[in-house]
Image 1 (cartoon, rainbow, N blue to C red):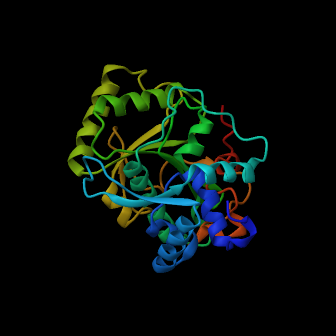
Image 2 (cartoon, rainbow, N blue to C red):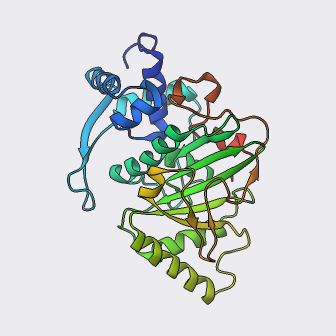
Length: 299
C-alpha cells in the first residue's frame, strides 16, 4: 500500500472502516469522513488511482440500474488487516453463515447508517453511539448468524440495541421467520435487545407481521427463552426519520428506536455526529468494540 503516513487522516480512517464495512459509496463516504460529496468523490477516485480501492457498478434483479461502489483491493485488505492486528488477526468465521451479503444489499443497509448519522445527535445525551457492520457483527455470533448491522442508540444511561435484518424483497417469509427463531435460539445478546426487520414496502411489512403472528400462535415457545423483541418497519420511513419512525411488533405494539426495550449502557459512549470517523473519541464505534462497550460479551 502507498506509504500509510502519506495519506490524509480522513483517507486512513475510511480505509480502516472498510475492513468491517466492506463497501462504500460516495454519499456515505462524505457522511463518514469527508463532509462534502465532491470531496468524497475526488478522494475516492484518488484512492482508486493508488490501487487501494477498486470502483465498480453493482446491480441485481431488484436494482437493475445498479449503484456505484468502492471496496478495498485484495492487497490493500491484507495490508489493512496487518495495520489493525499485526500478527494476530481475528480467526476466520467457522459458523454456518460466512458469505457476505451482496453489494446492493450492503449499500441499502449503509443507507440507514447515513440516515442515522445525519439525524444524530438529537440532544446532548440522545443519539447514535454505535453501528456495527455485518462483518464485525458476525464475529459476535462466531458466524452462526450474520446480522446486516447492529445499531446502538443511547438515551442518557440507557440504550437501544437494535439488530438489523434488511430485506429488499428477495427473501421468503419462511426465511425471515427462521432468522427470528435462530436469534432466540442463540441467546448471546444482552437482555432487552431488539431485532428489527426492515422491508422495502408497506405491503411486505404488513404481510410479514401477519406471518409472525401466525407463527407465534402455532407455538408458544417459538420465540425462545431470550424473548428478543421483534419489530418491523419500512425502509423509506426510516431513511426519512430514523429516530421517529414507528416500528410495529407482531403483538400490535408500536415503538420508535427511542422507546423500544433498553439495555443499561455501562460508562459514557460518545454520541456520533457527521463526520464521525474524524472524532477521536468515537474510536471503536463502528466495529465489534462498540458491542463490548455496550456490555455485550458475545460468544
